[in-house]
Image (cartoon, rainbow, N blue to C red):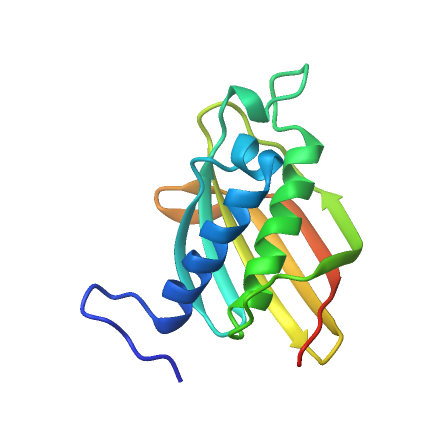
Length: 153
C-alpha cells in the first residue's frame, strides 16, 4: 500500500516523477511534445496526467495529431509500468490506438494509464485519453493498449 507524504504525494508519484525526469533528459521527442505535461497522481499500476493541447500538438486540421496521442500512450504506459517500482519503462513491442474523438488548441487532456500486468519480461498497459471538462474526465479522445518488453532482475 502507498504511503502518503505531507504534500499528498505517494511514494509511487515521487518515483514516477523521478523516472520521468530521467526519460525527458534523454528524449528529444518527449521534450518537444510533453514539455508541459503534469503528472497528477500515481499509485501502483495507475498514473494520471494532464496535458494542455498546444500548437506543436496540432495536425493540419487544427486538431490533435494522432502521433501525439500515440506518443502519450507510449509515455504514460511506460510510467504506469515504472509505478511498480521499476527504474526503466521498457521497450515497446505493440501499440494499438483507437482514435475515438479529437481535441483542439487549449483543450486539457486527461491521460489515465493502467499497468494491467507487469511480469518478468512483458508488461501490459491500457490507456484512456479524454478531454477534461469542469475538472472531470469528459469526452474520450483515444483508448489504447500497449505492450512493453521489460527486464526484471
